Length: 376
Ligand SMILES: Cc1ncc(COP(=O)(O)O)c(C=O)c1O
Image 1 (cartoon, helix red, strand yellow):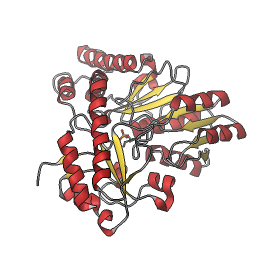
Image 2 (cartoon, protein in one colour):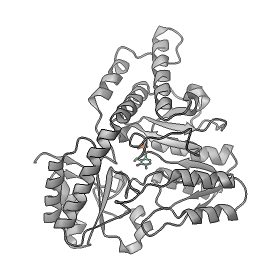
Image 3 (cartoon, protein in one colour):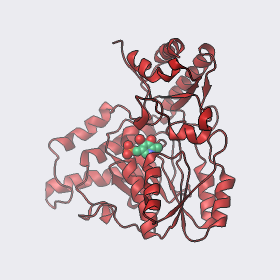
């Protein structure tokens, strides 16, 4: 097999060796339980709290608002179920293009009769229709939770979460945003953003899998999602994922230091892939709003539907190009994405999501254009 080209960084990224180096002492000699009172425990407690301070400083919030979790899925489950069970939100307003960590959680709450779920309309390019959000919130009564993602992991559309937060504030609704695709990729200033809950996942920005954060605005009290010990100030029971927490913080520090450089590099790769495909593949289009409000890391290509294009993920894999049809759960078989269906109905083409990171090169983009040209 030729050298593989990895262009599925929205699914997961490689672990940065500098992150691994920061984690190693906590996988080896510093193994103490952070809840132990003797020196082994004190040194690992210090590592957890130092990581929390670092994450809080980068996101411009207080350390007490940051809770370490196992990732984006757990963070969203905790916030959404907590808003319903502890904050009395009986209405949830969301969109049909959310990640399954949100969609399945709200569907489950609806099925159990704990909340009623309403979906905000999408514009033709897949962006949230903010006027419709306003209309939904005007018309309902009782506390509501709005859960809308900052960036869509499949098509890359970015939502103006400041505008969403302001609408929520006007109507007294709580606002949770799944920021898994933007934490570590965009500066986020929590002092300045009208959000109540956000989430982050280490493996999306060269940190370890199974590490994440939940931000809970000060003054909001949720009961723990996992019952047991009193870790994470009684918010999340279970012995801390020490090396994951240290790795999450180190990865976020490195991503923040390298932000300008990485963004410029990755943006140019995305642009040249768009241009290359436009030049060489007949009928190619792009899902979402790739030249407008969009992640610089994601390009979702729409190929005219043919027998060949239906097989493209498989054939690209054979050619050593690793991409997906949508979220990680649908890669491998192009069985259709709920996001593409929600935006385009049956009109969407065959979706191929390319997602980049700092390790990708212009030469890889050239090779991929050539492969898509010959396989589409
Ligand atoms: C937008 C979005 N939300 C949530 C998740 C789930 O995050 P995790 O894998 O950390 O549970 C992902 C990743 O797959 C994602 O892309």
